[in-house]
Length: 114
Length: 112
Image 1 (cartoon, rainbow over the protein chains, first blue to last red):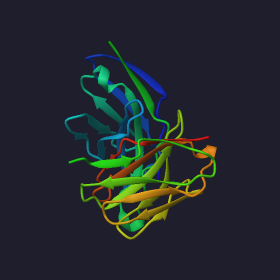
Image 2: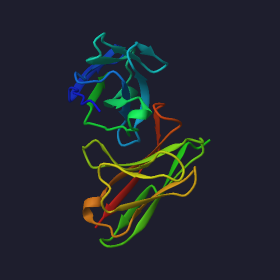
Image 3: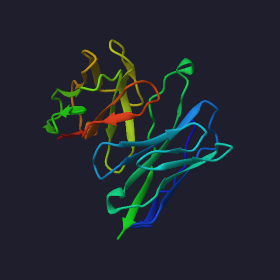
């Protein structure tokens, strides 16, 4: 699976959009981009995933560049409860080429400031 | 609907003792996973089970065994606990491949 690079930490003001970048320049055509977050010491929480089109759900939006070498997770109106470690993960999406479990890196620690 | 239930939530073991961490899910998910997370670190995969009756090693399987008892339950056993196994253990499930994981709340294990 392709390796990802994320900034170790970011700050965001409460009520503003939080834009979390992720670089995955070696991504393959059949690899999906996943985002998870971990609040304090809880179990990680699934946020969103996508292949090449932009995706949106009730939690966030995922913007993937046209060349798929990077992506941005957008939390449109960050709250204090969004303070967490955010993980960007790339995973092969084709079962025929081998099932892969998610591999978590060190993520980005987002601190939402009041 | 409890989702993914891990027991116990906390455990202190002495070096050399054995124990089994339990994970049960009520979502009828096919795949189940065991991860460990050391302080300040990301999660590392220990073992996983793609479906009932199958198990595979992950990144850090040494010192552990697993059992997929049925579709609902996936247990992790430490035969002879070592201080290096002090960690938080998370169980996760996935309905089908590429759907997204649901995690339990974790078991905090200390080996002294």
